[in-house]
Length: 88
Image 1 (cartoon, rainbow, N blue to C red):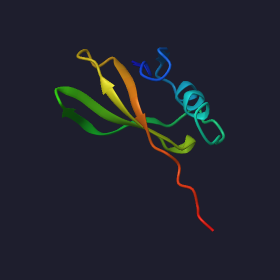
Image 2: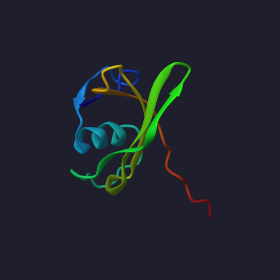
Image 3: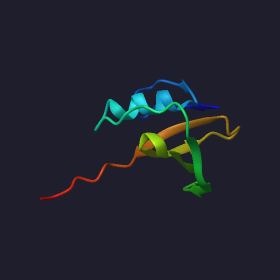
Image 4: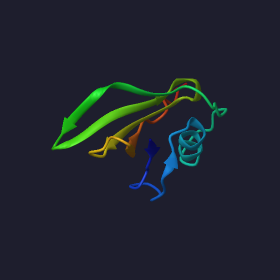
């Protein structure tokens, strides 16, 4: 399987937490990387004819929505969660 954040960087990575973390860290707050804990979260859902699933790296603090190809071997990151900012 692979994570393909084409809509972000046009790069395909092996489906490993370190790549998911590095891509997320380049766009926002940096949390310590974790090289474990990458999960497909929830079931596959179809929106406008496209199959999607949430990808979660709970230990590393990343969550993203991914579009899945027909073979279900490539996951294209199409959106990420934004961290909450505490207001004083």
